[in-house]
Length: 178
Image 1 (cartoon, rainbow, N blue to C red):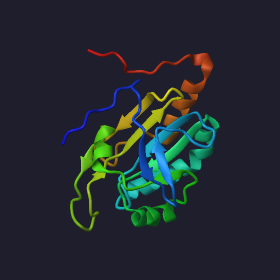
Image 2: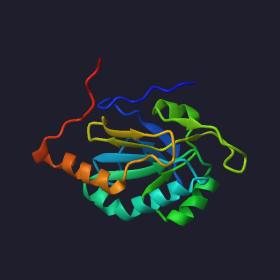
Image 3: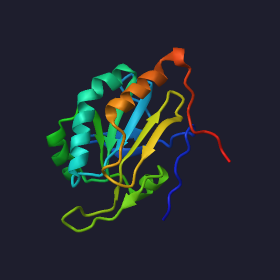
Image 4: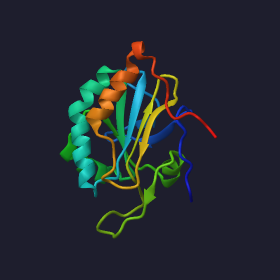
């Protein structure tokens, strides 16, 4: 199965996944009074780079929230694996799990098979970040096919600070179509 990459400025598809600790996360729908949402797709428990990235994200969470941006992280891991990894991260953001291959493809993510049963037991998404604005449109996107290629969170935060400043009147970039 191939996936179509989401276009900048397109409607972000609202996808529902189970939420660690109970309930559900609706990806693309901000919560807790925020008007934007950042969806961080991570590979899963088997990825130590993801654990480090999510820990850093947690240290910057109040700054993202201060810009009106709700943050949610999601993977294809089971609840048990997600809980084990989040015991190391100790996030203050919501965490979704059990993302399906169909949902991964709907978001245009790269999907990998495990290299071995020791790595993990199911296909998983490679890293992706989606920033959805107040109109439900994809404002910023970054997807990768490898764990070591993802945006620096401090640089991303600075860029979002610039975009969210109304004085800059910054449009969604990358919308020119052939």
